[in-house]
Length: 302
Image (cartoon, rainbow, N blue to C red; front, side):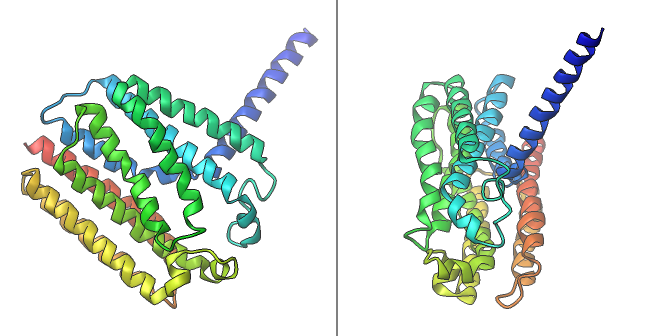
């Protein structure tokens, strides 16, 4: 009886340890940030639904591929930036610098996540499988762009904007002008708010000779550039409305997105960054959800 209890206790301890590890890895890669790009990928699936009806397995593997790719990219970024994160007071408590996870732990996590992404891509077809390798390269390479170019934010936007393009290819096995504008909208959207977020680290980036746009150009120029990028985001979505011949109901959602983009730039000032987290997490999450809701509603109305 005692041996049975001991076995059950060990099993419970093991399960608890695994659960805690999963939570720690999820915190390391900021899993909740998936909400920024995932609605764009799902929007591409809904748009592709007009002429190509994906089955449940397509949708499932697209979701798994999204999670795998993003997890691999974020895990790799945490490894590449571990030394710098340890020096920055804002990031010093991240899992690797604080010792909660080792680089070896993170490396194994990246390998597993990459394998999940590649396998998911293979389940979506040969083209997706072959494209999964350059996609991983683009995602990983972002971690080094801050070392040599102030346009690292645009590169991040480009890397993440491959998500809706990949989802479209998975469903249609082709590329369309309409999804190209959705991809450009995501690229400028991500780059714009990443520039705002980078304003928190201007002093650190300058001290470490890192090439963030705010560190090179200053907060005022950075916020103007961010506003321009978000203006382009709205423009690309508007062009998509016309090229894809969408129903007028989408304009309602697009108007709300425009209002939120303006609000984001109203509450974040060059000399006042206290609302940066509200702009970064709350407003941007809502924008992504509104876009998907708008495209889904338009499809239902159609």
